[in-house]
Amino acid sequence: MLKRFPSKAAAPADLAAHQLAGLKWTVRHAFDNSPFYRERLAAAGVTPESITSLQDLDRLPFLTAQDLSDGYPFALRSAPFADLVRIHASSGTTGKRKVLCYTQQDLDDWQSMFARCYELAGLTREDRVQIAVGYGLWTAGVGFQQACEKFGALAIPVGPGNLELQTSLMIDLQTTVFCCTASMGLLLAEEVHHKGLRDKLNLKKIILGAERSSSAMLETMKEYLGVKDVYDITGLTEVYGPGTGLSCGHGSAIHYWGDYYILEILDPTTLLPVAPGEVGEMVFTTLCKQGAPLIRYRSRDLTRLVEGACPCGCTLPRHDRILGRSDDVVIFRGVNVYPGQIDEVLNGVAGTGSEYQVHLGHSEDGRDFMKIRVERAKGLDPQADLQLRKAIVSGIKHTLIVTCEVELVDYGSLPRSEKKTQRIFDERKFE
Image (cartoon, rainbow, N blue to C red; front, side):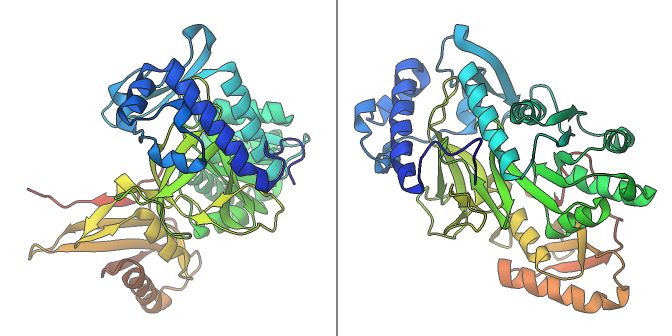
């Protein structure tokens, strides 16, 4: 399946051996070159010689975003400054950015991983790729662009926002692939539809990153932009950046590049592996990252592993879409509620539109209440509201074991954003 950017493991059966070799290298590299890691590993009673199997991963201490904040700016640096060629950063937990440093080999590996995403999405060197994500300290823009150039397609580095510029370039340059956040993709689709521009476009594919997307959003993009395929791309600044996995079109599962990192799915509370198919927190260990290697990094992102062979022919492992973050949980009447769970319920209810909001508050008697404002699907008769409302309430009750109110609103009436759209509003006051 992947010919130009194949797996480093010759066959699926070889992946475990490849990961073990990479794990041994990473622990040795971090122990020898990072005071932070050497102290942390020594405290856990681990030396590089301790790692003899993948099961020894359990012996390694966890790494968190707080560790990056506490050691700001170069908490994980494991290479001499003379060997570092770039930094990227993302927002941190206490106002300090999470700063990650890269060697040239790190950048080369990142580009290869990302170029593999373009290959899996079926791009060719004839494609024209319009990049509508942020540039600067964030990894997105330069990641999309350099991988596009490595792959050999034509990069159009526009950056985010400015719908008028985006649409005019798409028409004038006959863009075939558009890269953006899900919120930006929906906003663009509705702008194209409003102005009647669809027949002037030559779009074939959309690649989405940075936030969850609902089935309704994807269908709107496909219809209004005239595209057949929409792909989800994954990545964290801490794990190189975007391009560490991609959906293949056979369902929503993401092929992740297990030849560059080990992915554990752990219970956020017990930090033990969850059962196959259950939701847990994504924990990353890189296998060849030089500048700032990761050892059991708790991302707080939630997903589930997807087992079995994929019809697309790609043999690298899969996980589900990102379902939310473990630190985004809201507690409603004693139940942990993750935004991704509400996404999944609404995705399964016919007649819902592209956007929703969840409002949590206190009623007059002091009890918590949950109101979900949901757009109807475009063109849906409001006379169907009663059944649609019942279906949503039932789905929430079945999935979350909580009761909610549902308010249905016209399609397009909820706010859109060129960045990530806020959907959870917790207006409760706690003393």
